Length: 155
Figure 1 (cartoon, one colour):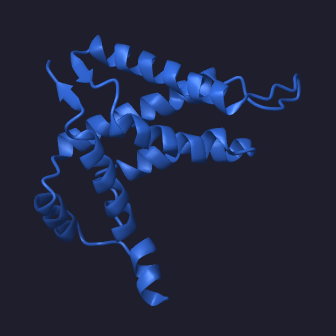
Figure 2 (tube, rainbow, N blue to C red):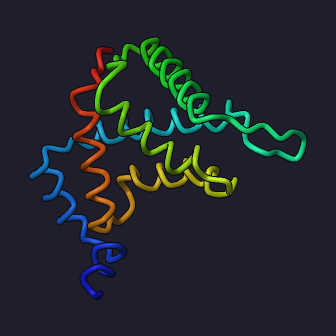
């Protein structure tokens, strides 16, 4: 149990984080870019989602509608980044990974406060100035490796 606790919450020294980044070929500037992309998508999803069972209406969206909403947000986010000369592949495992993340943490949640906490989670995960626990580094590394060959910064 102590090992799990340490993995989840014990902060690693910055020197160990630097070693981790070196071992996994993680470039800090790309971490910031990937965090911006992930957060942009999250904000777009939250801001444009009709919601389910609001106080004003009782809109219940099917899984197909939720996927269509995600796909629309994904396409818009890609076009927005193209304007900044940052090219993102429109299909692939990175899109599937993010769909699964948002399906589980946003579209399948009935609690609005869980949905609203997503941008804060993303900002904390990609914040290079805060201490990292091993669990944070594992998640960050998985996301980084998923996005590293799918995002091309031109300008």
